Image (cartoon, rainbow, N blue to C red; front, side, top):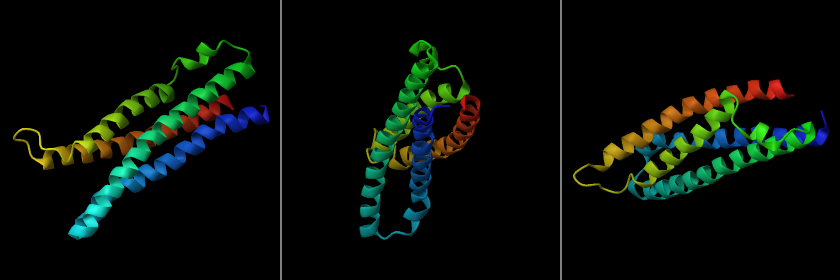
Length: 154
């Protein structure tokens, strides 16, 4: 395998591992918020929202890196670009699903402080937390499938 191609292909998993680490660190806020006082809670909440925005942008960036890697891989293999761009494995399909779920998680996080009709805040906060829990499990599965895919293409 060409060294340049290897570096380009490895950019996606390295960036994804950093994103997974940041996502898991972000999830720990649920436990930490219980022990914060009112003033520290507001600062922590703002940091949590800011980090959530960064995670959403990071998710888009990691997916962008995956597309770029597949385009460059297609060029090196002398095959049409679309042959690698169509999701043809569980990792690629799961990645697109993951972006949608991450958007839902991000959107639900932004709606946790808005009271909708007679519904309380706690309902949307609990939903946001549960989505985060499900996402953490799916992220680990997705990373494992990505590792298997990486072994397949190397």
